[in-house]
Length: 268
Image 1 (tube, rainbow, N blue to C red):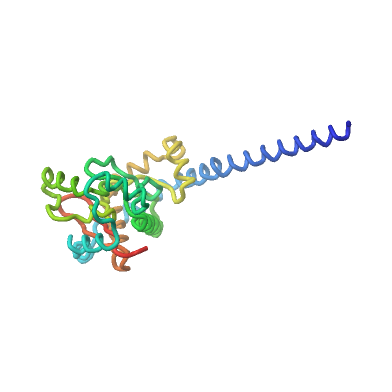
Image 2: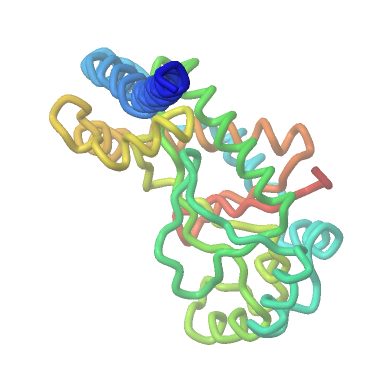
């Protein structure tokens, strides 16, 4: 009887030890690892600031013109081919979500979504893949220039036919014809708003919770992104140009509003 009780106690102690070990490991990877990584990044603030100051500000005329070379018809043609047709009203959007033709576009460490007034946060699954490629390539190009990581800001996503008609009546910049936004394959990316971020979701979640502490300097990096937004616009624009040349997307460098209009150009 005593032996059985001893064995039971040892088993319980072993299980308790295993639970504690798992919790410690979890805390280490969820808190200690991202905290140390972000502190290390924060210590490079002056180095990053110097890198920003040495970068050319604007894109060349040739590259800007190339980003203006695709037209609305090119975007609409691709959108009708790879997007969802017949999204007249929000009920059609709900139906497309149920059929998994559309998915909810959520914020990630690659992009943030500005409060949407005239569009809905839904896109096709392939459009999400495209945005992930854009975000990853943008951050790779930032690292090549010895800059901190930023995520871009999406200002407009899906519009139903009804929403597009309402928008065209109140906003003269909105096309009065069919827009590629009506198919779930286009987004507008602001080129003046960037948010300091991290290269993986674990670090990003930690940064969102604790990044405004003095040891992580998120607010200072965000300020740096505002001061040097033209440098970030240049790198984002050149990133989009690379992907357009690779046939992944169509891009329009908008003149009347500060956005890159981006549309999925092929099946992913």
